[in-house]
Structures are given as C-alpha cells and as structure tokens.
Length: 553
Figure 1 (cartoon, rainbow, N blue to C red):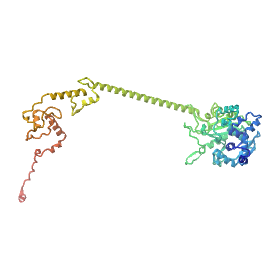
Figure 2 (figure 1 turned 135 degrees about the vertical axis):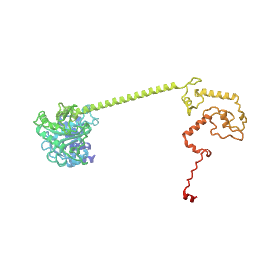
Figure 3 (figure 1 turned 90 degrees about the vertical axis):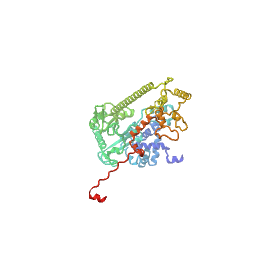
Figure 4 (figure 1 turned 45 degrees about the vertical axis):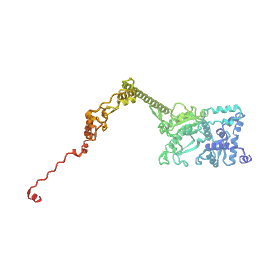
C-alpha cells in the first residue's frame, strides 16, 4: 500500500484514471464533473442526499479529482483554465494523449491536439459539445457498484437504468475533426470544414453522423456557409488503395451501402444551445431555405423521397436532447413537417416501409405459389392414386379363376399360367390353380399307371434294340407320333435306318423348323454334304483356227 501511495499520492485507482484518459482523449477538454458523469455515473446517486449542491458535487467528483491530481503528477494531464461557472478545465498532455490512444484503441495520429489554452475564454463551445455528448450517451449507472448502498439510492439508480438508452460509448465520439475540401487529412487546405463532433455507432444504427453545436451566436448565413463546406467535402473524391475513385470520407469511415439503392451523404445534426442572442426558432426556417438545394430529395409517386447525393440535415435543441434523449421525437429534419426520433430523422422510413411492404407482398406471393405447387402435387398424387386403384381394380377383374375350385389365381400362378413358348402355352393346366393342378397331375399319373400299355406294332415287337419302348411324343407340340413317324425315327436290330436329324419332333414341327432355318439363314446351304452340291460346269476350250494354231497343236 505504501508503494501505491507513493506513486499515486491522491489514492486514485486504475479504473478512475482510465475514465479520465478515455473522456479527455475523446473530448480533449472537460471538467471533473463531466468526467464523472460519463465515466462513473453511479456516483451521482451515491451522494445525491448531500447538502448543499456544492458539497454533493465535491463528493461525487472526489475520486476523479484525485485521479487527475495523480495524473498531473505523472505528466499525463494538466489544468487548462476554468469555465464561466468556476469549474477547473482539464486536458491531456502529449504523453497523456499517447496513453489515451491505448484506452480508446485509436492511432496516435488521430488523437488530435492537446487543447491547451481552450479555457482562456471560458470554453463555452467545448462545454456545449461535452453536454451534447452526455445527452447522446445517456450514461447508465452500474447497479452492481451500488449493491451496498441504501435502498433509496438503488431505487433511483434503477429508475435511471430503465429510461431510454443512448447511442454509442465515449469511444464512439471524435471532436474537432477536420473535413478537408483540399489538402489531406493531416494538413487540410482552405475551404474545408471542421466538425465539432463525429459519431460512429453502427451497433446502434448510426454508422456515421456529423454534429455541429451552435450556442446561438451564428447567423443562418454563417451556418449555411458551413454546410456548404460540408457539401464540398462530401463530394470530394480521391483514389483509394485499389486505384478506384471513392468519396474521401469513405476512405476513413466505413458506412454500408444503402440497401434500397438510395445513396445519400452522411447526415449532419445541428444542436442549438440557447446561450447567445439568436433565436433558434427563427434561425432554423431561414437556414432551411438557404440550404434547400443541399437536402431536398426527389418525390416519387410510390410515396417516398430519394435523397441520392443529398445531405440529411437535422436540428434539435440541447435542452430537448437532454430531456428526451436520442429516442425522443424532438429531432426536426429539414423538409419534414413533424419531429421524429433520431434514427427516423436521419433515415428514410417511408422508403423502408414501401420496401418492407414489397418484401411482405413478395413473401405472400411466394407462399401462395408454394401453396399452389403443393395443391397441384397433392392433386397429381391423388390422381395417380386413383389411377393406380382403377388399374388395380381392372386387373383384379381380369384375374382368372380356377376352373376346379373357383378361387382366384395368385399373381405367381397367373404369370405361370400365361407363359408361352413360340406362342404355345407351357403350362399343362392353365385353367387350374396350383392346388387343383397338383391334384389333376396326380390323378393323371395314377390313371396312367392303372391303364394297360399300348401294344407295340408288329415291326416293333423286338424291344431289345428299340430307341423308344413306347409311342413317343413331340418335344415341341407334345403330339403323339404317328406309326410312320415312329418307325422313321426308330432304330431296330443291327441295321439302323437312315439317321433322322430331328428324332424328337413330329413331322409337322420338323417341317416348320426346316422352313424357318431356310428363311432366316440362306447361307446354311453352303454346309450341305458334297453329294448334294451340283457339279461345276466345265469351261469350254477356245476354238482353234489358222496356221498359227496348227503350229501350236
């Protein structure tokens, strides 16, 4: 503990010193009260019961005041004058800006200047800018850090947590950002603007917002001239790293392309703080007329405006912004007839509504189309089912019945009964089912066993050398051989008859087979026996004549 006290005599902690670095790194100059309200808003509720208000303020800012004292000892911060109300202004040194770049995770080159000397005239403009940041942030107290506090303190903090939230974090803000119409980012030329604030909070729907704070000292013409400089900067194009020309602001800030095809410039928010003699209610209408060419969009018959190449300009009072926050309907966009919340004011809700309606209609059409396809598929399936049922019924109607028992054929028996070979039925009992067929075959076999065998012809009484001991049947048509055909294919004794080429076929089937062979394969005649081939015709010798032929002979 002694070592910590030696390094930080005021007893500050890393948490409070981190608050100072983040707030001063973003805002450049601020009071201890503003640092506390942004970095540790729970302290505002812990000391709310102290009287008078000066003691309450002293109590809730004591931790950050000690952190500033220790940082001043280390050369990170310094006092920069005082405000009109007597509050001490604080700013960072170059060493402090380098330390703040780590807290804010920004390059040192983007940290800006030290704002030394900003409090020489009371710093009314920086204080208004800081109050604008606080009104947009609406910092919420950490209830876990008030767990040991009285119930009324926790209840007040919980009520603050339940109010509408703000936009972004302290790291979402940049102050005094140059917008060069000529020159570079680091060395801007003449004719450019300088934004009081730049807000980048894409997580809250605000990818890029330029903010101008006016203490009601400037005339409408002066403000219009400043907006003209904004337009010059936003129209400026430079070559990007890929060699293509892009708007210069897109080389520093990432803003997604508009999803509906409308490509407006980043919006500009004008915050009016009623400190000067100008009346915002008179300044805004005049400024609106002077800048009409910058913000007026193109009206379409579909019921919305297109703002391609235009600057959305929005105005709000700091008092209303403090009271209602970014979600309150207190933002007046030039060209519209009623105030809106910030996200609606910088957006295009009519265009979004039209496209949302188109998306819903497309989804409805797609759903109807899918329903129609499903209905057609169901009807087709029902039709196929009906046809299949009709075909099954027709097939069942054609299914044969057994001539013996009357039962219907099975699919296997029906197929077997209809099988043919060369147009002739193969099955011996095609009109009977399997059971009745087996009975019929068994009965025929028994009958054949009981009947007397057919007597052989006289020429075939000698059975010893016979090929067929009983009358053969044709292997093709199953017809019984005639005696002549039987005798022609039979061999008896030791002197066989001339060999028959088709001994298992009857005379009719043999003739049909020979005819088919002759018609289909004419070349088969080349394989006939040599005896059946005709003899070749001799070539006649040439006739002899004349004395020369006589000499040759």
